Length: 257
Image (cartoon, rainbow, N blue to C red):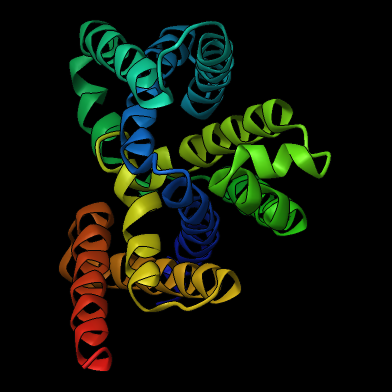
């Protein structure tokens, strides 16, 4: 157990941050954007491998640039965010498939938390904690913006600026999770715990708390079971999260009777 504690710590903080992001992604009805945006990181990973630097830096840089491009296009065209992200998604997936070395493609797609160094873990935990604290500090403004931009604007909230901040935070959350669960499954890391929480929560605060709790529980299951059975933690995380979602769906049906 001691050998997996650093990985477990990183997984808990990354999952908590991603699950909290998922709350606002669901409120904005952009559940599939997390999945698509995670694939945008692939060319960045390919560039980082070519330059022989940390793949996280390449993924983060490319995600930030792409998020900025998405934000600009959203306000200068009549296209929705999911449509714009879809274009970036297909182009990035194609570029990543072309340029990522064959030996590294599986790690890029499915992650490998066992390869995290002490520095990687420290950076992941620190940035995840910063992301969580920032989201908590602006959660009311974000929630109002997601529900109604007109209402948010009427009380002085700069919706355009808040949209930009959220996309950047979203990009950071995706980049943090790439090493843990990979680009292919990252969208599920963000959405599944939040979807399960939405089934049974009755307030925004409860929605946020349950989403984080479900994300952490799934992360612990993924890392711990993977260490026992010598399996990759990413798929186990997704299956654990899916089991929680099914149970929450069943619970909602029972309590509504």
